[in-house]
Length: 119
Image (tube, rainbow, N blue to C red; front, top):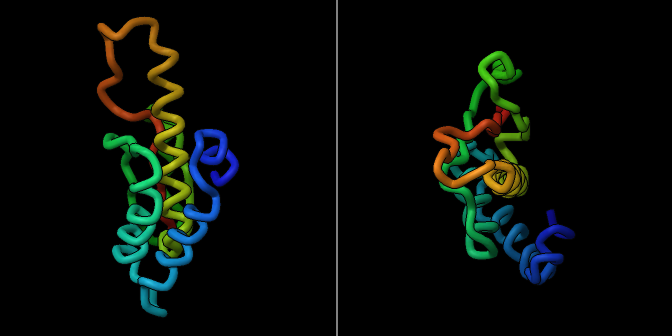
């Protein structure tokens, strides 16, 4: 993620400072909601995130959504940096998918990649 952002002109030190602040902002129990918010705040100011990205939190293994046409990105739901990476990855995949659409007259109505935060 840091390398890809650096290629887009984002300062790597700013990214790492934001991620370190996200880690410090959550308490030692690291509730998933706090981790998600801290991770989103860490990466949000650096680039526009895809608003249609979906992150599902669940106990244990996430459901297999491939049968419904979705690709899942599993990550640790208690880690703010993991939330930041998942949001970034979902955004990059959504951009790639939109670049592959043959025309803008038939936009995708739902994401085909979903983040699964394993708790």
